[in-house]
Image 1: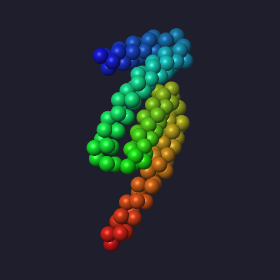
Image 2 (image 1 turned 135 degrees about the vertical axis):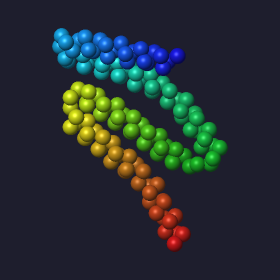
Image 3 (image 1 turned 45 degrees about the vertical axis):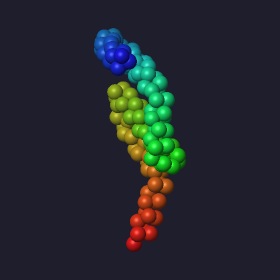
Length: 127
């Protein structure tokens, strides 16, 4: 049922944003921004269920908690960067949008560096 709520909020905000854009473009952008933030917080409420599922997988497979934590950080960075980048792009600031994407990719690379180092150690041990 919540997906219907999110879809209705999105559609109504876009229609309102289009109406306000004819009056003053800033108002249209603000309406869509507020709706995007509301939808973002709807998504945040689902994080608890995701963490429970990840903990079940972790306990069943015996995966290290640090890897799960790393994975959750990477997913969080991806979502936040995509969200903020899309807002910047929709507002007409595509250069800033691209910089947010680059920063997100670099942050993910930094967080995942220990996994790559461990992989290289394992490969080196096989040779």
